[in-house]
Image (cartoon, rainbow, N blue to C red):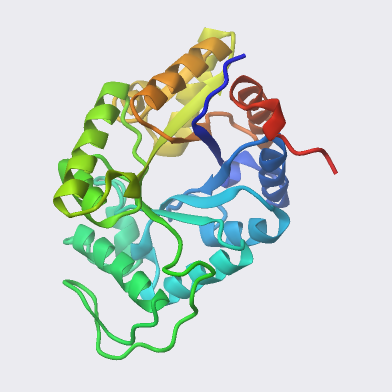
Length: 319
């Protein structure tokens, strides 16, 4: 058994094609905590039927005690910024300060329609994202006006403060040169999915350089990783299952997705070795998306991954 010092999280399978009763997703989160996972995450899209991420975290907050509850990633452009500040502050209270908010601006060729549905312009989306995060922080700090590049409010109402002073940590998803610079300058963490650990190491070095240039300590940014995982001894079957998962999720074959995203399939030893390479490159928190088609298969994988990577002493007794 391989033991990792890196914190380990799991993405909830909120896509409706993966569950028949959405209440099973709450049980999945509870089971992840019992198995010793450090965090449970939800993603965000308007394309395809799924459970809305902030609603999902609200359901998990009162029934879990220890795990971090995170978004991987939330697209703030889909929501009114003042309203979403209140929603996030509410989840921070309901979870007693266990919320982490990873944000992103969407994917070219995929997210333009989502922006149109949200009545938000695609152009200058990165400036709007940074403004939204700055506005949240201003509201949580009790400020009553905000002037950004894209968002401006001359008069703001009293807003719900967060459980933690200053609000939850806000991480950025992305690995472009601009995203790396902005992460170092503005954000509390980094959650990318580069397909090669060497690219992860280089990106983290760029972030730390940007942080230093902005007068921030490198330790101010949590380095994390989002990776798709499938544990199987049957390599051919695993590759077929991964391909079906990628086609269902993105409408793309796994060969194309592998060129963009971190993915590992195979034996327990192979999966552990791949994750260890990213940990050696600097990742301190690894979020696993399980490439399994149903909630039942996801639960089987949840236990397999825990058996490979989590210390038995981290697990909670069954109740």
